[in-house]
Length: 391
Ligand SMILES: [Zn+2]
Image (cartoon, rainbow, N blue to C red):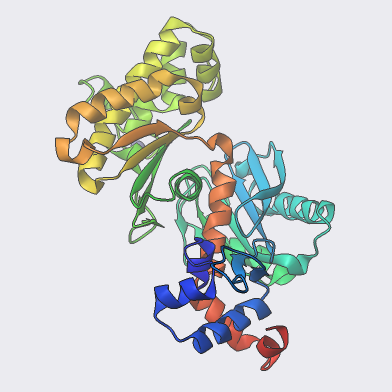
């Protein structure tokens, strides 16, 4: 019933009765329980056909807040959102993930505390915490698993770091997964199947199927950066950080582009300078970005055949920097994927840009803490009679 009200499908008792087939008395009892949890607002009015207008039911997005963190390799973003995903406060900082879990999580914890204070909210208003990290995560335990660019984080119990103070669910996931969820939740609510590709220093893909993150058996689904691409004999021998040769990331990631620009005598220490050079219209950088787009398109064309998404969203610093990346991807995907798989496919740039991660982290948490199972558990745990008192 809460899901119907949140989606605004059912906004009156009569709507809910028609949609669920439940008796009015059952609906009233259930609404009383949700009101006792502070999750509903009841407004007078609505469209009347004579007589007393029916009261309108609305989800109370201010019934609590979510703390969201998108921890990146060199910079991180934090947010406090309400239960509707609206950002109430934001913060960001340049902090090296390689400094290890203690300093990074201490920093996040302190900033969360300051943001809550600035909003005049207590720790008890926090309903859940969502954290994205740049590496593979065992979602069930919130522990990173052999993350290549996160020394000291392997197996670290991130949720336990926040459990004492807040006593709420702490969900951790790979950053690309939550970015995809953020896009789906914000801009593509009517879409069930979406792929989100992040092109930054590295390359990764979030796979969203049936509106949910597809993590795979070990949390490694979507790791397209280490798929080998056909790019000619020489390129296929380029070593990758994973130990293999000829991986997509080693040829088309921002780091790889920087290396190739340096080989041409340009001053390009990292992916960020590739972005700057492309933006400035440096021809070598622009054509390299296009070429990377085509290589990424090769792997995405296969992914489109495999998953048949409705939307392919391209994000990350390099995607935001220059339209040539998207152009290269589109060129190959539409040419190489099956016509049936591309008939309704849209290939678009991320609209949330660098906020996709925190918005997705918050969405991951609200979907969990407002799930029917979680709400039932909260109602069962509340003292008897409280529902009647508030109803
Ligand atoms: Zn690799």
